[in-house]
Amino acid sequence: MDRIFSRTKPIEVAILGATGVVGQTFLSFLAHHPFLKPTLLMASAKREGQSFKEASNWILPMEMPDVISQLTVHALDLQKLKQSGIRIVFSALPTAVASEIEPQLADAGLYVFSNASAMRYQSNVPILIPDVNPEHLHWIKKQGFPDKGFIITNANCSTTGLASALAPFKPLGIEEIFVCTYQSVSGAGFPGLSHLKIAGNAIPYIAKEEEKMIIETQKILEIDTMVQPTCVRIDTLWGHLEAVTVKLKKTLDHGELISLWDREPPYLSAIPSIPKRPVVYCHAADEPQPFMSWWGTPPGMTVFTGRLRVRENRVSFLLLCNNIAKGAAGGSVANAEAFLSTYGDLL
Image 1 (cartoon, rainbow, N blue to C red):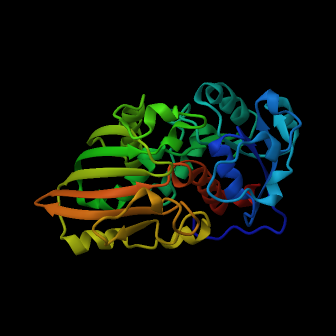
Image 2: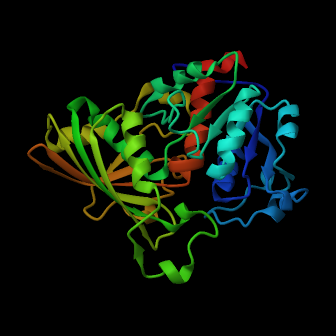
């Protein structure tokens, strides 16, 4: 990923599950994208023929872009998708549906960038975060690329922030990871949790979330370190806050650790959906907070850290990750950009 992908004519892309929260976020990222153009939107059959504005209950904290409001929504139809000529597909499908459909699309030669967990744990499928493990992009060759299509997944929303914040510490030797998450209700999708169930409350269990964090953190960072998460749903709308304690083999002082986050990897200039500084440290004692979830450029793609404390070889800090931008749709868009910056000449 050492060059900026450029193209005079935009690449048309499809979005599956376009009307849900993650689908909406895909469209917000792609509405004015420099080289990707959403042209085929697919959702449930009951949305067939409606405009996107009619078909979606827009809940994002920004206005629906005019350029996408009148796009037609089609029923999910694999044959139509295969015949469209589109090669790049963004999937916001439910896991059960994705597990059946995504492999069929890859077998048909399509390039699938998935937000679903269905294929994350296959040994030849990368869980890609370009600012963390860009080398895993090349795993698509294990799936037969360039002769065949492929699936690239992004991580679970809670894993994304954790992996992004821990990646700079990997050279120090990560021996143990303890994390407690405070996850927003938007992570449960829409309509998600009943307001009566979550209002003024915290629910200390999110099904399969802790298992996902363990497996994905180890796979992304390529470590067999113990990961011990506790996941809690809280009454906030956007952003997952996480309290992390990590045991390191080698410990630097407070300022040196912050400097590891304060980096601008040069290869990220080829990936417009990732900020120049993927992780930003907050020096205020009471930050980061969930209201900051949409801060940064692009909005929602910065992982914020704060409250760093060092005691011998244990380091504690807080992090904040926007669960539907960096931790979902925005992450998949960045993965497509990373792919194009490396293999775009093959399209």
